[in-house]
Length: 500
Image 1 (cartoon, rainbow, N blue to C red):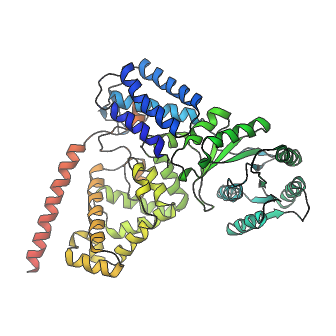
Image 2 (cartoon, rainbow, N blue to C red):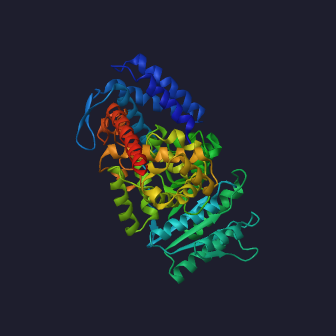
Image 3 (spheres, helix red, strand yellow):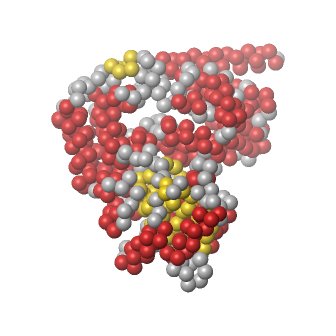
């Protein structure tokens, strides 16, 4: 996701890595990479020029802060290159925002009319919005107003059944406006406080489509009109949004399939071109995969810094109070370097409920570039290997020598090297997290601790312009890791000697 954009900003960061002063010459060199990536990502040329102009003006006009305070109050050094990236982050967020993801109400009820071309995913988005409203303790009603596409009504009915939301459909020959009007009356009569109208699309925008939407709008007066756009359409998605915005009063955009788009230009340009903000992102096929759009989170991911807030929100959406408390205790143990593979296994089960592993990696600071290298069934492989270990081995992975690894591999149907790699990665992660200490937002994510603001050579650019951040410590962390490895090796030798 968004690899094209990320590559350009990463190249710009590397070019400015060693500079001591931001000058017009080195800024132009860095912006050249950004310009190329924006254009390759299908961002409109006028939007690109405006964005680059604002970044350059601020980079040359603002005084670079060489010392800033991070989230823990420490004073850390900042480089001109990091100051430049901080400006890019803020300008990206401004380009896509501000966004209010709340939904307007009329007479106490939330009513949403979904519009868009055929094939962009309106029906699935309708069910996702109904599920989103359910989570807000609302009682939604879905309306099947697409009378042209074969099986459209049946698709919505099956999606409604999966989330226990009723679907209002008309009789054969009923006009879409009449179906919607009858549904609005039913909602008032039966106490539904939210209603989602799934309207028909076309292969292209035409007068017949717009006339039908005008009739539905006049019949039910929805409080929200949301345009559903397919991110994979690239610049065409922006053109479609502009065409709809010229004919209808749009309140927002729902961008689908952004998780499958390597470019991401539509997400960057749609607000700038149409003035209509993205309100929601559809990031998967299941009805739970809809998230309110946060420009700051997407800007941070584009710059390769992850989206910590979004990750915490995903976590809080799938756990209850007891699970959250347990995860917090697990996180504290990990930050003390005491987490066992049993704890790790319980965390994997929680992570699985948060969504596809690729999306979670994309939101982890510094891990976005590895998201597409993660296999979809990776968690299943890991679980099978951990389940094949004895309770003693899960509590003390240092016990797993070559013979034990061979037994675990046979029991889990995996290769011996995979078992050794898993144990090695777990011990390495536990050591690293033990170095980070306690506290921080990611402490609420099982097994992640303070990954966002700690211990790396990179400073969080948000700290440079008033936000939180982290500091250095990379060399010290490396020395500490080597020392722990020596201690583990000595402990293994002592155990073997004792068994003899």
